[in-house]
Length: 96
Image 1 (cartoon, rainbow, N blue to C red):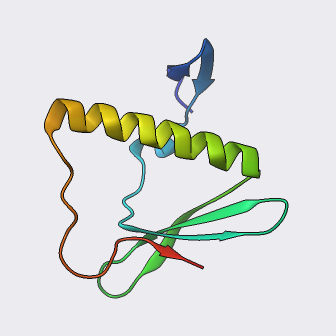
Image 2: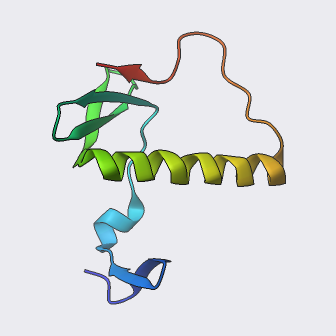
């Protein structure tokens, strides 16, 4: 485990293991939900076939906070780098 603090958000300091710090590649996400939780299955759709590389389960309020943070950060990204173009072909996300 790394002794270095991870990302800071609103005064929150978190630790992140060296393995987690490297991250995983995902180019699709499958989203499911119940009344109590949202499930995000991040998928690497690469040969020899798609595989779930990470699963995140969270409360609806946290999923909403994620949506809001993602919208804000996409706006910042596009302000700095221009509009994000969608690739041709099937959408990179799937909802279950």
